[in-house]
Amino acid sequence: QQQVKQSPQSLIVQKGGISIINCAYENTAFDYFPWYQQFPGKGPALLIAIRPDVSEKKEGRFTISFNKSAKQFSLHIMDSQPGDSATYFCAACYQTGANNLFFGTGTRLTVIP
Amino acid sequence: GAGVSQSPSNKVTEKGKDVELRCDPISGHTALYWYRQRLGQGLEFLIYFQGNSAPDKSGLPSDRFSAERTGESVSTLTIQRTQQEDSAVYLCASSLGFLTSNQPQHFGDGTRLSIL
Image 1 (spheres, rainbow over the protein chains, first blue to last red):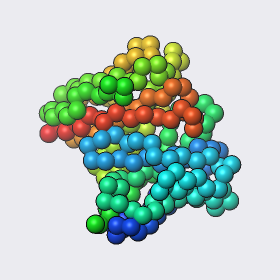
Image 2: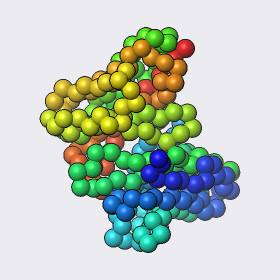
Image 3: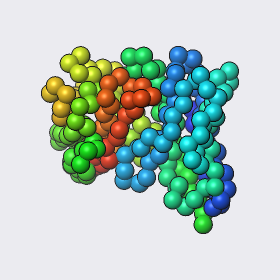
């Protein structure tokens, strides 16, 4: 059973546009929600993360929006650039005694110049 | 380097052979994780080591898979009698301790395993 559901599977955005990737979860015990960026041939790299005590976190052009009641969170990439083209994974875990992350299935983002 | 190092980066082997994958975590990181990433899919948790505690093997898909870690250093993932469905990228990650927002996972670049 997929603990974290991610959509869309792929996304094409014009340069300068906003990329939006959505994730949903069921387990209300999750309390840490990171996003990872993965380039071809490389391992995932932590991009930004949020805890459920805040509704939004922004780092540069990347923003996580978190809706605790709906059990949803999303990644927004503002002013998308061709260099942002990568696969993005959302994830969730329990912080206390956490032993692994539950990953979404990934979104392949292509930013067209 | 200071990152998680995995070797080999690529491995091609015949069905039925055993393979051993290696992971060197970041120095000082007590937690180490193995994941499997099939083509176009997300990461599938395999096993977790935390210090000297018993590893969490709950993600291992079959008894053909095993992993060892000596103390807080190198880990090896062994797949015996490989099958074609074992073809995937095997990723290793480490973290300072229990996974928290202040102690995120750092991933290696993976070993791409291809079973002929």
